[in-house]
Image 1: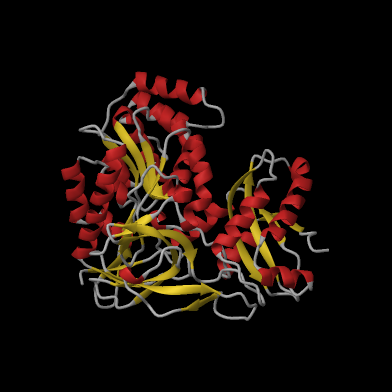
Image 2: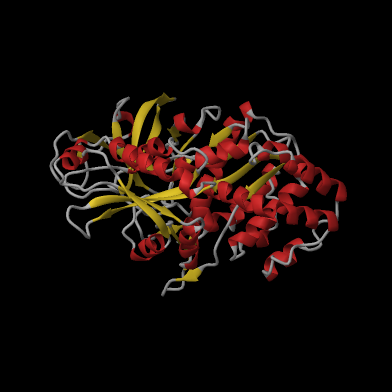
Length: 490
């Protein structure tokens, strides 16, 4: 074992240390090459083209035994396999190596954008590990585009870049280009609410590539807004533990993406899951069958993925629920359903991450001018009966105009939870009315900053969709401006 890598810890609230060897990085290269081959059939890339990749890392710590520890993405981005892949495929990031190691992700994002604009006509596609990072990057662009134009016009670097590593990497790496700065200003001034900013600034870009399933699904709408008509291509299916499958149909939208299992990445087993119809309180709402191999799965069936990896994990349960939708050359095609762990439960109710996402989507449709930036939830048992609390961050709304709409959003969201246990408990007052809390703008960025301050990397950040973390709840409750109680089930 060469390193220990840690997963994000944002799904279950704590990070796990996992073994990492050169085989791990080699598997990543294999997956990316296979996936790139399928994408190139539909979106051929010009020779010598560039990729604008928003990649972030963190500096490693060490275990008591002296092994370096950092995130899985940082391991890969600093590995010789990654650097060799960049050379052999001529897929260069639009920023030097020092950007990867920068500790301030805001400064790194600024430099990514700067280099991306400098090479704008050569960029073939845009990418980041998670769609969240892309959305954050273009939110940052909305605030900093004029400053970026000044740097390009004058050949300077903004004083906001205080990191010595970044300044050393960037200063002297480009010359002034007043014509390019003028062109960028004209294109930005002609945009309405930043719709289609990506194809406007990168006219030769063919698609946007990132993980867009699971916890990243809520960011697809905003990413589609920035991308305009540019295709969104969902990246491969994997975890910190190992890669699992590749997207061989890049033209499918993120909502319908499937992944073909690559059998030589690990030894895969699948635990059949059968949804319970009773209201009995349990760990979750599934009964389990005996594990089967790849050849034993059935189309239409739901399964939990189990892996035995080359790095030493034996029959490791990922906690992911997938549905088999078909086969490709004998390998199962999987649709990602969600995490198995229940995220919202008070009594006999069982609502998953997907249930919460659907409820939020339905409730947020009633917003008029406001835009839902992000959300999370909490199962509040501090009073009897317990109730769900859903936190929304909005932008672009006016308090008086939106008041009645937010009350309606709260009611619709409460009614949108389809779990029969929840509905029955709401009717019998076993569960109290859902509470919708509107938090200040920037609240979810505070959560991101908290995650990074604990040693996390933005490239691995996934917003927890349900939390009982006292620090996060303190941030959320301390930032709540208004709250509403549902009038449903009266």
